[in-house]
Image (cartoon, rainbow, N blue to C red):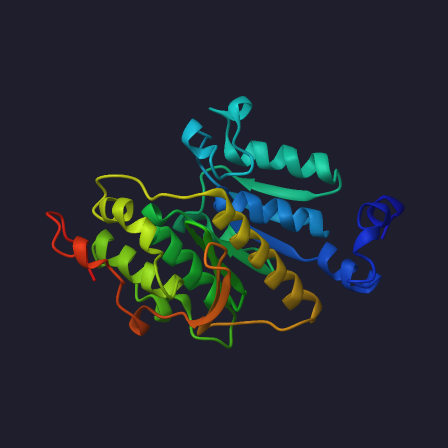
Length: 283
C-alpha cells in the first residue's frame, strides 16, 4: 500500500484495518450500467476499491440530471463511461479500469467477467435479455452479484453468490416471456411493495407508453446499500444479507425491510382505482 493510498483512505482506518483496505484495493468489480451504477461505482472508488470493469453504451441526456450523479449540463451528450472514468481518476489516479463501450452483451460476457471478484448489476430493464445473461454467467462462474434498483424514495439490493438461489430462479424472468411480464416479475422480485405514489406513472411505463419515474434519494440509498454490502462481504464484517432475501430501504417511510426477494412471494400492489385502467398491467 503506497503513501498516497494511505493518505486518501486514512479516515477509513478505525472502521477498516489496513489489511482490509488492501483486500478491497485488490478486489476487481464489474459494473454493468452507469446510471444508478455510476453512483455505486463512485462510492466504491471512494471506499478504496481500485480495479474495475465498467460497461454502458449510453450518453447523458438532460432527463438524467434529476438522479444520476455524473449527469449535469456540462456532460449532456457525453458518454456515461467516459464521464465515470474521468471522475474515478480524479478521485484516485491509481484506479485500473477497463471500459466496455458497447455495454453488457452476451458476446462480451466472457471478457467482462474475466478475473472479476464481484458484479454490480444495474443493466437497464429494457435490456432484460442481457441482464439475465449476465446473471446466469456470473452464477455459473461463482461470482457474487449485487442486483440493485431504485423506486421513488426507496432503494433495493439483493446479493447473490454461488451458495444462494440464483437471479434466474428468484426473478423468474426469461427471454421467452414478453417484456411486460418480465418487468412485472422483476418488480415483484426486487421490492416488497411498490410505493403507491409511483403507480400513476409506472402503469404507463409497464406498457412502454412512457418512462419509469425516479428521484435522487432512492438512487443514492440503493448506491449506499450496494457499496456497503460489497465492502462488508469482501472484508468479512458486520451483518450481510443474501438471496433469497434482499434489503429494501424506504426513506419516505423511514424504514428498512429485509424481505423475501422472489417474484413468487407477492403480487403487485396495484391501487384499486388503477386496476381497471384502459391499459391494464400484468399482476
